[in-house]
Length: 70
Image (cartoon, rainbow, N blue to C red; front, side, top):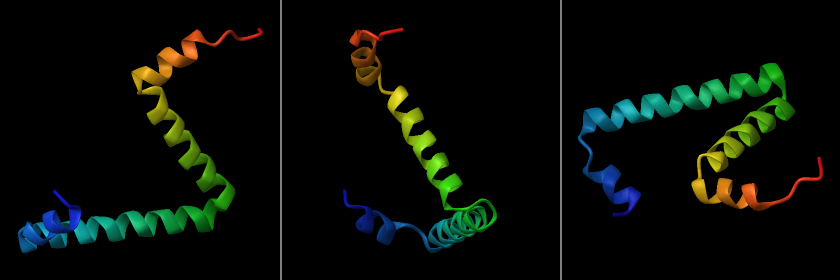
């Protein structure tokens, strides 16, 4: 199912709730960018991406096979 189709079938109150939530997340992201700068925001994004990779069992198994020199 396509996301746009799913949004079109949502009840109006749920759609309004999601729009409010998206606005809050956007505002929080912008505030973090203003307060801490773009480098901090990039670090947070990279950290979250890395955390998602480490939740993937295939990635963890692959990394476990690599010999580390230390």
